[in-house]
Image 1 (cartoon, rainbow, N blue to C red):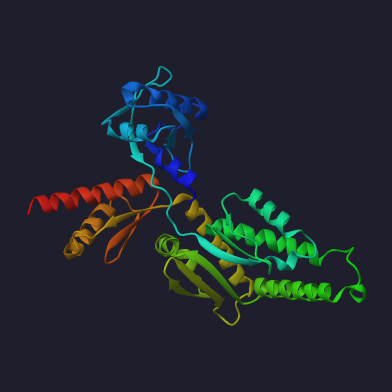
Image 2 (cartoon, helix red, strand yellow):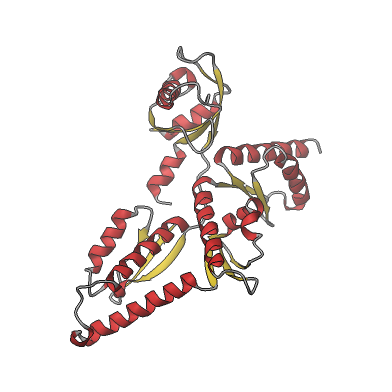
Length: 343
């Protein structure tokens, strides 16, 4: 995450309990801005309001000053009142838990495009089209490192494949007999890469790279994606990255089934990457009481069925929607604190 986005996240709160369907969305957004700008509500200047969102009755408010966030959170009760509303509504205000899923670093070989494009211009085009990606320096051999989220890297892959395909289908290219040796070499390499891509797309084996946390969440809440008996899925977990290997199961199964399952997993991964958040509960001070933490988490989870808690030796990762993650960790910490006080 770049510094600008991190700073914005620190100035953002999650608003739950927004009355849904009572007023026009634009009107409701204005009412939220008015409420959180008022001094009596510990508010301040609002930079941005996002409503509606993917979650029903949830809005995101970004303030111009981070100190306002702390002030707003200190107010015990937020009553949303306005003459346009039939009654007042109690709002729940929680900090915005930023998406902390790992990013991917890839090294691209841009030399494939050397004879058709000025590489610096092509890279500038990529930077303009996807500001979510971070590019390194272009090396003399045409290699360049790129860092970004899984969805952004996937977009980059698809974009470059289209570029490569357009080169291979160029009807106005010179005949092979008049091509320079270097150009013929590039053409052969391009044809080989595209043929490999086509075979991979139509063949019986596929590979999907996922964020490990998202993989665990999918395994828990999207079991149907991995329950297809026609496709055998194995996985290799390497820290923050999990690689899935998909291949035909039954001898008579359709080879295209493998590709269809891969696309479903990739699409679900993108949706989860955009909606899930992760919070971490440290166990450094109470490593001897990990069993109590696990028991407490099981108890709290009954009220948050869509939250996934993953237990490690030194910490617990809590994954779910922003508001659910915050509420879950708050309840767990309160219960643990109460247990220690009653000793």
